Image (cartoon, rainbow, N blue to C red; front, side, top):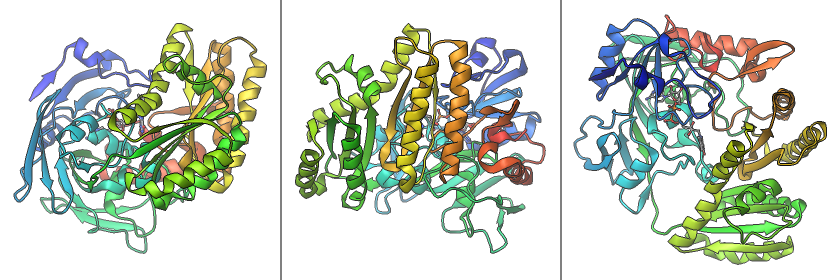
Length: 510
Ligand SMILES: Cc1cc2nc3c(=O)[nH]c(=O)nc-3n(C[C@H](O)[C@H](O)[C@H](O)COP(=O)(O)OP(=O)(O)OC[C@H]3O[C@@H](n4cnc5c(N)ncnc54)[C@H](O)[C@@H]3O)c2cc1C
């Protein structure tokens, strides 16, 4: 197994895409690159200190950042799952070498290593089969997306990663291996889950005692009466064990989806349109994405054909089989005074519209670099009936920020998964003073989302994020579940990792 102790390699694992967290190179002893589950077990059994697990490092909450030192285990070379008889073996050349998946075409299942990236997985699958979760950043590894319960635009129809994971193999902090299959092990009426490792070691866990908000949610450990054991590990940000193999459900898709990007001069019109198409989900509406006026201004640099003075755009994706719905949507668009729409029915048009959506983060990042600015982005979700109130709050907070710091340039940009009432409000800050105020406003927004029955994270997770609340820096998750919620998570962690070795610092557990 490759182990690297040189500072240059270690340095690559000291931060993530957030650029808000960094670990000290001298605190990290080495980066290990296991290729098999056995090698993973060997590391856990021989090294006795703190361990941080790394995927591709595209996370934006510092969750793979080894701020407590010890070693890093990079899972990027874990690209060959154990051989599965009665499955078709498919392989492809990836960045980390030849990766393999085992495909059970009849059952629509695939078994993959955690180091397989989302884009590599798409390359290796037969053309008419897809893995529905579609996080935007496709260099993310399957292991990382399971550990964060990642979602994408099509989460509106297909749900998050959780809905598509049917099996996990994990190495626990004591070096034991557990094979968890969906539908086999559940919490009893007292919230207790009993299970055994492959060598027969017995574990007894009581699930966290808190109520999760009833919205798309990636904050904290999963907890629901009668829950399946596998759901405790999905979205657990690596604090309970290291995923060594993943079994996922696939679907057969014979035609590419259809996309319609509609532009509006009035935001009220855009919202009226969204309210109606949200209710048409069961007819094959896969994704509903929103772009505010500022987002369109950013994208215009790359798509100059976007007309001036637009207030909002809505990108809708629907199954090709739902073409009869298309006529209805056209009628709706004229009822809500659309300015124009771009419709994609061919692969190349679809690529253009995907490019449209993906160009936004790039344009924002380029702007930040040019203006030496810094972005503070939210990930809140609220229940549908509360969404208008949250939207009003976003606007109010945006105006407050502009009013306090009048200057040229953009102050904020809002875009995201409006189908799930999950928008990303991004403060664009240009000075330390602006950053301090933006963080105050961020707290105001987070409190509003919670008060409305929502969550502080719909897809990014909470990682090592903290917030300054009344002069005290608290774990981000504490805002939603209180100190007792963090204690509950710590209790569950201790049941599986009594010496607090794995991914310490995530979800506020230290
Ligand atoms: C431009 C951009 C767009 C993005 N878009 C989306 C989006 O649409 N939806 C979304 O949900 N997220 C999005 N993200 C965030 C990020 O891509 C996801 O959180 C992703 O799931 C992280 O995967 P990763 O492999 O990079 O994991 P990392 O960042 O390396 O790690 C994330 C967490 O997973 C843990 N982990 C990784 N592998 C394992 C394993 N094998 N076992 C146990 N724990 C493990 C790590 O310890 C860490 O806690 C985006 C990020 C960027 C930069």
